[in-house]
Image (cartoon, rainbow, N blue to C red):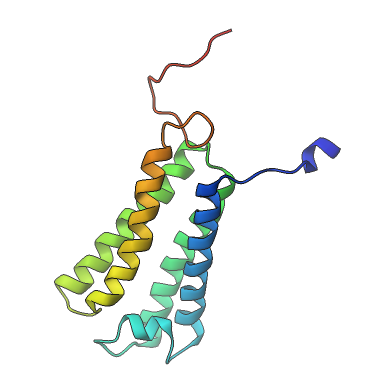
Length: 144
């Protein structure tokens, strides 16, 4: 039983995902409970209704949860892919909001692109790593 509680080291990518998840959880909290908050500041071009803030908060909470789960399970292919895709979807959604609907400012978009872009590049670089990220199908493996 003591083996089940042994220390589990978290690689640098895991720590980054924990930091991103923490940032996302702060954004979630802001959207749920604050009217003059980070959520309202991000969507400054339109009035933030309660339902819109809560919808953004739940969506962000889901992506925050993916970050935390992936940080401690970097070897899980489905979880790794879902977390990676959450960054792709976030950038796509926010880019459309900024460029098409003009509901967020470019400065707010730049912050999210920096965080999501860094995460995506790092996750792509780690994808085939022997120590961390999942291995792609067809990759060579040691046989006994």
